[in-house]
Every structure is written in C-alpha cells, then in structure tokens.
Image (cartoon, rainbow, N blue to C red; front, side, top):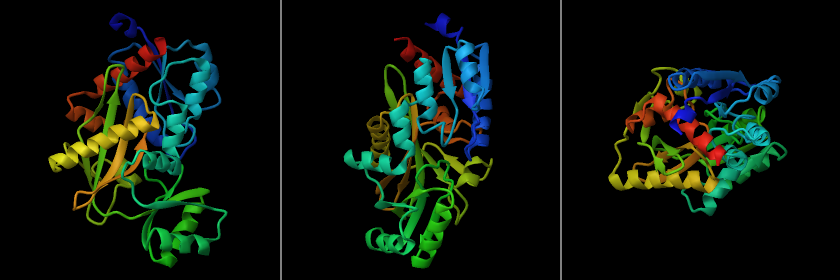
Length: 318
C-alpha cells in the first residue's frame, strides 16, 4: 500500500462563498504544503462552478475537503463526491449535515445521554416577545444565542435580561433563520480532537484555550496569531480528563463521523462537563487547535494529513 499511496493524485478543495472561506483557503495552503512532502501530485481547487468539471476530468484518487460552513461542512460537497465515487477525507453526508445543524446535533447528543447545556431552538418566524418569554421561562436570564448553521463562533451573541436577549436575537436573525439558545455556562474552554483510521479511533490530548480576561474564543481569537493561548495537555483532574475524552469519542461515533472531528466543551469549577458542539472538518491553519493536539500526541502535521489521505484512499478502495 505504501508504494501505491505515494502515487496518489490528491484534490484539496477550499474556499467557496461562506463567511469562513478565507480560513478555508489558509487551511488548504497549509495542507497542500504538508502533503507535497509525501505526494508529488497535489492540486488546490476552489469551490466554484469549475470544480465539478475539474474533479470529473482530472482523474483524482482522493479529495481532501478543507472547507468550513455551508456547502463544505453541511454534507453538500460530500454528497457530490459520493456521486462521483471519489474517496474523500472526513465524515459523510449524514454526519456532516447533522453536526453542522446545531439543533439536530443536540438531539443526537441528548439521545446518547451526553451532557449538553440546557437550550431551545428558535426561528425567525416566531414573535420576538413570545420567543423571549419562552427563553426566560425555559432557559434562563443569562444565555448564549447561536446561529444554527455557522461555525468558527460566527454570529454568536451573549445576552442577559429580556431587552438584551431581544436585541441579540434580532441581530442573529439578520443572517440566520434559526438559532439555538442555551444557558450560559461559565468555565474553562477545552477542545478534544478525535483521530480515526481503519484500525482504531482515539482522542488526542485535550487542549485548553485561554483568552485575555473578559474575552472568549471568538472568530478573532481563533484565527489571529497570538490572540489566544493553547495549553496542551490541559491540566484537569484525571477522572475529568478521561471522561471528557470518552465523551468526545462518543460524540464522534453517535454522529457517525469519519477520520477526524473536534468537540468543544466547557468545564466548570465544580468539574461539570458540557459538550458544546462537534466540528467534522476542524481548521488546519497555523493557529488551529486540531494540529496542536496531534503534535502533542507525537503526530507531526505532515504525518497527520498523510494519514488522513491514506485512510480515505484505503476506505474508498474496499
């Protein structure tokens, strides 16, 4: 297999029209540079109207979607690659769609009895006053409002009190038709990568994300070098560390993910664990968490992306 995989022709798919397209391109450039140390035939392709023709005519062996948000993470590109019969890195159509749509993911996590923050789903068609009353009654006065179909913490609002909650909901609904409202949990922000190949599935070392006082891990702190600190492995009580790792693997499995995922958590001062969400295509930029966790496990970035490509190729060859 080693001699075969060295000859692979790999399409790295990036960009598109989502609000995270530039992050995608940054990730793709890093992935391409690393993969060229293992394979000679690496092509970076833009997610545009020319992509189908290129994928069909150029006889690629594997596709590596390095995409975030709509089209890239919601199962759309995965479905197209399935139609082409082209092996690809990452989760399939159903897992991608379910993970990106926060209400669906929360239902799946709840059915598996994974610990999530109390929350409800709201939509743009509802009267704001009724929505706010429902939130105050069923979630509380201090909440987080998350667009249902965005990643990288885009569009998230924190709000306290009826007036602030109403204003935040209106801002979220300017760009999204649906949102999840959750009770705000105060605690340490951690993230856990899961890496899977055809022989095993394992949790990578836990990363704690530390931001300046009064800040949180928003889009700016995710992708601005030096804006946040990654502590790996996170310093947690052993039982909490092991339990959080187990939950990350369970989240990966119950969603039906493949190859890789990264789940975000809050750990309270009393060691309560709250699963926030699972990302099926974690960022691969120079400031990204998933590569940091892999390095802490002794897996270089070059080795990581090669393993992902090889795993996808082997799976598609069966």
